[in-house]
View 1 (cartoon, helix red, strand yellow):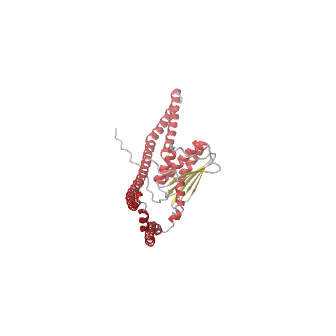
View 2 (tube, helix red, strand yellow):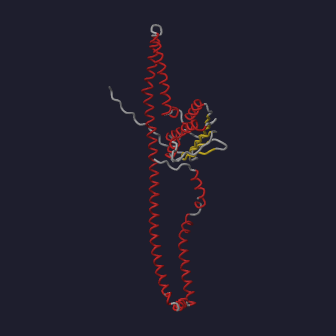
View 3 (cartoon, helix red, strand yellow):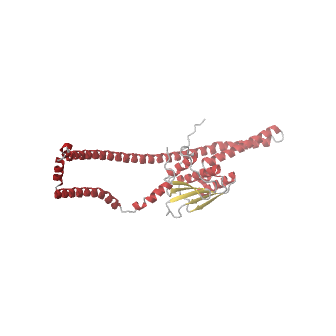
Length: 354
C-alpha cells in the first residue's frame, strides 16, 4: 500500500493560494464561466454584422469580382468558394476536437474518482491492518504473561528451594540451583521488556499521560539523554485507538532521535481540548539534534512510513520540520473523537485438555 501524501506543508500552501477564490460567492464563478462563451459568440455576431454592413456600403463583393476578372489567369474568382470550404473543414475539425477533448476530460474525471475511492480504501485497509496488529500484540502479551511469565516465576521458586535445601550438603547442586534462579530471573526480565514493547501496561492501567511519562523516563535512562513531557488539556476520553496511535508515534519518534539525531535534550508536548471545543489532539516531539533531512523517495524509512500510516488511518496529519539553528520537530494532529471505538483484543484460542 502506498501511503498517502507526505507532508501537508505544500497542501497548506495550496489552500492558502486558493483562499481568495474560495471566498467568492458560488454563483459568481458559474456566472463567469457561462459569460465567457456568450461574450465570444456576441463578438463573432458583431464582427459578422459589421462586416456585412461594411460590404454593403462599399460594394466589396462587386469590387472584388471586378478586380478578379482582370486577373482571370490566376483564377482569383474561385478564392471565396475555396475559403468557404476551408472554413467548413476547420469547423468540422474543431467539432471533432471538442468531442475528443470532452471525452478526455470525462475520462480524467472518472480516473480521479477511482483514485479517490482507491485512496479511501487504502486508508480503511491500513486502519484495519493496524487494528489487527494491535490485537495480535495484545494477545501475544497476554500469552507471554500468563504462560512464560508464570513458568519463570515457578523456576525461580523451585531453584530457590533447591538452593536452600542443598546449601550445606551439596555445594555443586547449590551453585547450579543459584545459576538456574539467576537465568530464570533474566528470562523473566526479558519477558517483561517484551511485554512492555508489545502492549504497554501503563497505557491500559494508568492512561496515556502516565504511559508517555514512563516511556520518556525509561528512554532517558537507557540513552542518557534528558527527556521531558508536558501535558495540557483533558486526556481521559481520547479513545483507545487514539491513545495507541499517540503512544506508538512517540515511541518511534524517540527511537529515531536515539538513532539519528545526536540530540542533547528531547521534549514531548501533548495537548488536548479542555472542554471538547477544540477539534484535534496534538503531539509534538522536539529535539536539539543535527536536524532533519528528508529521506530518499526511492528508499523511504519504514519507521516514518509506519508513523504516517497510523496517523492517516485516523484522518490525522503528520509534519516534520527543521528548527533553527538546529533540531527537529515532529508534530501530529488527530481529530478529537470523544467516542472513539476501543481496539478490542481478539479471543484467545481454546486449549484442549491433555
